[in-house]
Length: 215
Image 1 (cartoon, helix red, strand yellow):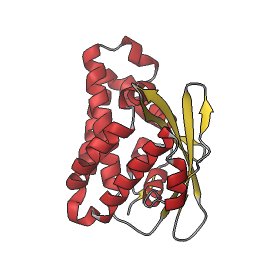
Image 2: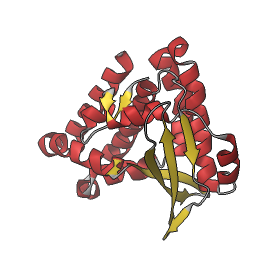
Image 3: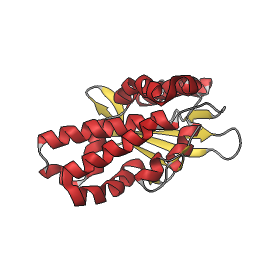
Image 4: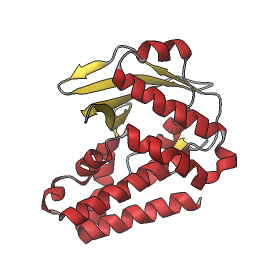
């Protein structure tokens, strides 16, 4: 499997980035931990996502990147609050955008998010994933703490920030150690947004997705 994400969108998507490495680890559920965590609906959402990722990884070479995209598309849509994530990643400029541009950016961000998982979760390597049953409540959000346990080496801390969206708990940010995915995305989006506005950012997101889905 690919290795993950660093401080830029490009490295987030590259196999050598920190996200790729994280992706390589989010592969297998520990049965006892899963049963304990499933008592909390936010943690249960993460377990469903991870199970789908595990299945996709095991069939990864057979499916190919486009097959993995199709398999993961409904899972990513159900697991993440992608409109909220898009708005946070775009930042203050979102308020002045037209509704047409906003919807186009949500669609492009959703495609990029799914393409990133399809690209990175391409094979299984025997890693384990552990969910902490002690879910933390912070205001209206919940934090689901996890550890990514490679076949060799030290575990990697990973936390999901979850929010109730229409009665379902969904991910609004992912922290890889101290690195926030949304903070990284906002930094990565700043230049194309400053140069070309909503249309420039849209073209940037589409180009990134196209590159991932060709590989």
